[in-house]
Image (cartoon, rainbow, N blue to C red; front, side):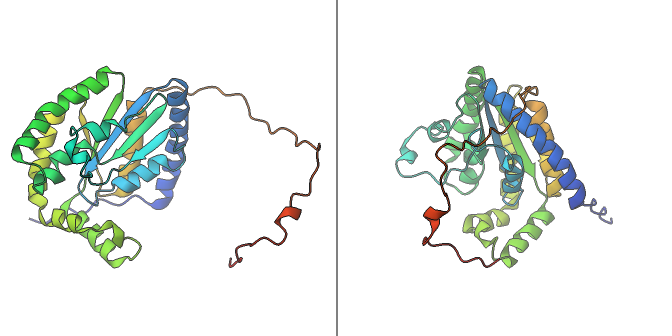
Amino acid sequence: MAKDAPAERMKRKDYEKELEKLQVELCHLQDYVRANKLRVIIVFEGRDAAGKGGTIKAITEKVSPRVFRVVALPAPSDREKTQLFFQRYMEQFPAGGEIVIFDRSWYNRAGVEYVMGFATPAEHQRFLSLCPQMERYVIDGGIILIKIWLEVGMDEQERRFHARIDDPVRQWKLSPMDLESYRRWYDYSRARDLMLKQTSTKEAPWYIIRSDDKRKARLNCIAHLLGAIPYKRIKKDKIKLPKRSEKGRYNDQAGLKGMNFVAERY
């Protein structure tokens, strides 16, 4: 049977036009979250090269890092390994007026830790059992929790891996763990399905976004977030620049004389 023709990729011009509109709305959302002291957590999960980093960048590009805070934790230290599993993640949870974006999260235990043998089967099963309870506790405490799974296809992941191999400015994105995850595609598929089945609840459902077309995925993700977090545009007074005071007039360029300036190459 012949394969279906691949869907047409979104053109950059169309993407940038739509992205600008959505980023304006993200700024309005930001104002509302800050003014009303909302607490929001957005969890991003997905296979390696699914597009998490690019999607997060599109979300945070035009907003304040003081409101939209990205958390990408490294592997746990020896000390952190002795803590309660959720402890180091909860230390990053938002205060009032913050949106915390987890670029990978506690769901590492259901994915890479389980597949690669860093967590025992008993630890994995305990996580799947306790995770919905923990998330229910977080939501009952007034935090808005949104969970996003970016789903990339096998062929597209392979294409992106080859692109990273061939591009020196993207090779840092490839680690031995990434290559091993590529090899164990079906192990990760089974782990994904088990995770989604046991942790997608009425209070904290998973939302899946197909990401073979990165541009469409980013737009769909931002549109979903704007619909998932209730907000209204806040009316603001028009900003006017005050007049500069002439009092104590000073030659502000004189003090720079003799200082080291960077050579202007461009």
